[in-house]
Length: 112
Image (tube, rainbow, N blue to C red):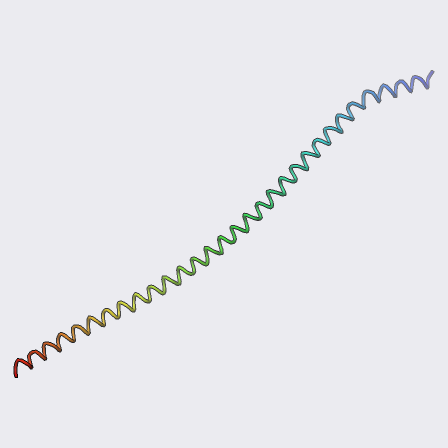
């Protein structure tokens, strides 16, 4: 009789605990599935972040290259402009000298 009571008590305990165990197991599986899904999302975001960082680095390199090229070109154009200004001044000076020379020649011609 005692064995039968223990068996019944054990069966009763098992029938009360088993649904809770299955519920916890189901919840654990669901949480594990969500965790796995979130892990995949995080990996995807990290991959995207790496790609963006690479693109930012490429953009910065391109920007520096363009800035360097622009700076070099500006210096070159400034130099060319100075040379043109010097040439212009020289041409003005030459023109003035020719005019003076022409005036002298004209005066000489008038004397003869």
